[in-house]
Image (tube, rainbow over all chains, first blue to last red; front, top):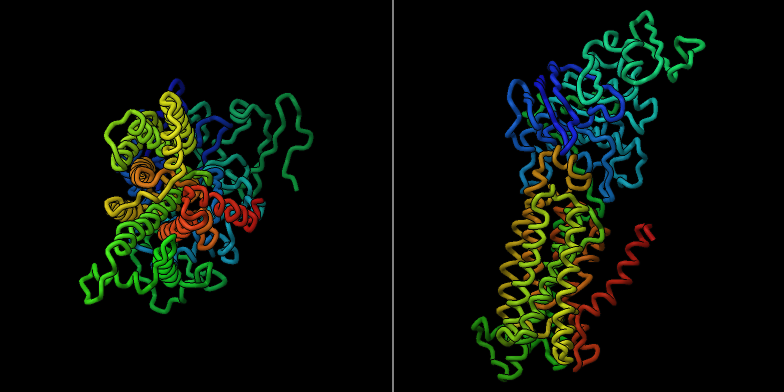
Length: 264
Length: 367
């Protein structure tokens, strides 16, 4: 599914948070959304997920304007993973993943065999099969995050929108998740703080600042020392290894980096 | 395929139209290990037994045979009718009272389960929205201001007051996104307002007898139960359950908040409005017929959640049945403990409810 965003604006009374965003995401692309805190990444994701009504501008899924679609129609196309959606309930991991079947269920029907197969596969994909009967409050932060991602996969979505999904994940699961997002042919738009991770796994990066897109291109094009200085207010040293992987090291402005280069 | 042989390709959107293979392993058992229909049937049998037993309990001795003869007479079976007074005691007082207790218990527990999910607040109960305070104001106004006479006008006044308070609540919420905290806070404000008005009217009236009568009603009492109230309750409770039931999956989706619920295709705002409206109506009918019986709507859903888990497809019918059983028995206690003196049933729901609640919290490791 390709996504087109045209001159999108969204805000709360007295403050525009997303301003004049125009964006094209091709079907199957993995696009990283980066930018400092408060740059509008989460709000843009929520607009594209149909959770916020834009003040102006158009969002199209495969060329169709989603304005006027109900949440069920949108949920059958796109899945959304919040930054940290928590619950007080005793839902088990399998129950949470089963929520992903909601857009396809009639209110009268229990989960059927098809639902069950999809839920099992989603659990397996996120290495949660062993944890399927564990209650929510007994899970670690990372396990909860993985349960939400499995829930999104159980939606069989054409597109997955994720807000900082690597938070709470240990390194192994960060890499596993990014690998999943990079290899699937579903369309992915993922907000990330870790620029190295974003550079390594995303086909394209979209850099936001002050509510608008200020750079859009391959990781090599977007991540330049000058831009990072202007946008993130850090001194960055970016090196590229023979495989084209970027390594970024930072320091606060005015502090010189002693030994730039790959670490670890 | 994954290492363990699970076909992961079903996660792709193009797999949506695939038909499932025939050789599927059976679904994993429910958390209790017992199939849900069996549990439901067991609970239904328990309810019927409780109702029958409760009819037999009371200040006048009633035997199973007597009950059989009363029912037989009504069904037109060839049985010898009971003497008029006893027949009337059973059929006009005891039976409607026990049935009303079951219906009100079911209704309140159902509302509690729904509101706890809608507001994502374990402290939510049917009175959270200020409905009972509005009903009290209506009842007090009728009694004190002498609008009409008899139990019907108290019921009518209570019902009008309940709807008035709900109208005010929705008016205050009309521009909001119906966020959980907003609902809870606005409900508290409405409840406080009507509680203050009730107190004011009662003090202004200054009549000790009126105050006592109202107090009895405020704590909840099944004593004035008649068939008309039972019929009204049956209609509203069954209708309410039918409206609420299709929202069971949506209520599960509310567990993670508005955005996640909405991203799952749930129309959050409509769901909230419908469910608030239905619970308000159910509560209004319950409070108008028997007063504000406390604790049922709060603890029964928690107890049931503890037994069968938090999924609403199971939780809602179980809560309704458990609430019915709970109130049938507490009302029986209220009738017989200090017979012939009656204790307001709300006293017993709290006396039984508090230790039960503590037990559940302790078992869940929250205390």
